[in-house]
Structures are given as C-alpha cells and as structure tokens.
Amino acid sequence: MIKGSCHCGAIKYTLDDSPTQAIRCNCTICRRKACILAFSSPDRLALDADASVIAEYTFGEENIRHQFCAKCGCSPLGRGIGPDGNEMVGINLNCTEGFDLSTVSIEDFDGASL
Ligand SMILES: [Zn+2]
Image (cartoon, rainbow, N blue to C red):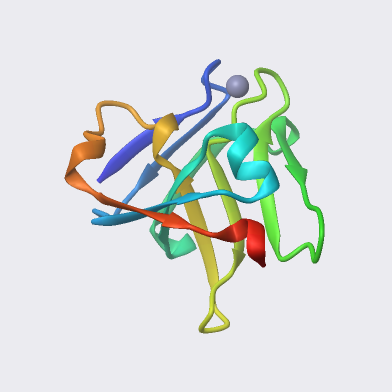
C-alpha cells in the first residue's frame, strides 16, 4: 500500500500494490520532472481528487497521459497502455508519503531513444 499526493494535496491517492521495481526514464519529460515511476494496474489505484484539478499533458505519439496538478504543478502519476495492451498507471515515487525508495530496484530506462 502506497499513499501519495501532489504538493498542495489537491490530488491524493492510495495504491493497493507494493512495487518492487521502478524506472528512472531519461525521456524529454521524465528528465525535466525527475520522475521515478512504478507501474501498476489502474484498478488498484484509489484517486481522491476533483477532476477539475487534474491537468493532462501528452506529446509525441501521445501514448502516455502525463497527469499533473493544475494548482501546484506536481506530477504524481501518469496513465498509458502497457506492452500487453492493458491500461496501466505509473506512480511517481517521488510524490509518495513515507515510501522508502531504497526498497525498490530502480532501473534506468532509455525513453529518450524511443
Ligand atoms: Zn497540487
């Protein structure tokens, strides 16, 4: 179980999952936002946020919906379609509360080359 939020708290979530792996992606946006992403299934995510506060950004092939807080600008999560064709959610572990990053193996992901 992981709890997370944006900085101002307008977007809060609980993820009913215990990821052991995460990626540090070097694509043009993850590099700028310093995202460390762990992936899970959207049905494990309980989101507590007004829809009006969730802004969304897509670029390139628009496969990933980068979601961020319209108030404080933090990017607690993103959504997209996984390699298996199923909807997935990516949690930015840098936006979690009390989560020990040393408990996951963080792999460098070469998103810049995609
Ligand atoms: Zn916020």
